Amino acid sequence: MLRGMIYDKVHVNLLRRAAARQGLVLHRSRRRDPRALDYGLYWLKDGTGTAVAASAGASLDEIEAYLAAGTPERSRGHIGGVTELTREEGRVMLGERTSRELGLTLEEFEAAYDAGTLDTGLPGVTGLIMLLPFAR
Image 1 (cartoon, rainbow, N blue to C red):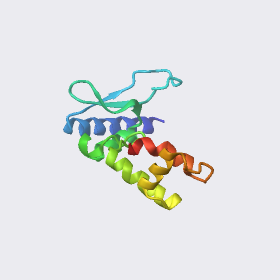
Image 2 (tube, helix red, strand yellow; image 1 turned 90 degrees about the vertical axis):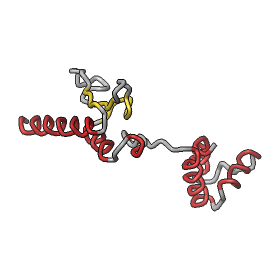
Image 3 (tube, rainbow, N blue to C red; image 1 turned 180 degrees about the vertical axis):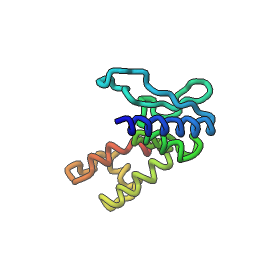
Image 4 (spheres, rainbow, N blue to C red; image 1 turned 135 degrees about the vertical axis):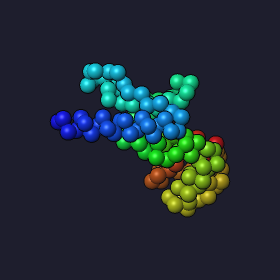
């Protein structure tokens, strides 16, 4: 048990230094109740105190991955399993999915959806409809 605690302390110190090199500060949840939702989680904050990644908190491994990606601009929020997409990236993603799953271009898919002629009984259509906000 002590060995794991020492490793965690060393790991945290390494991540604090890595964050400082990028102008960020690593903060740890102060919760002592293991049942609390943010128990054992960490946050990266900029100089103004604004969380730059994982507003709900992240594990040390997620913080490490974020810091390894470089500057916050380059990593674009790849933390906690969430990736933010621009509208153009969303259109590319949805276009690839509609082509692969339905054999339609994104424009054909959008036109059929808007006209109400899209067969929602086909496998995968509902999932694609749910992705439409990423492309609009």
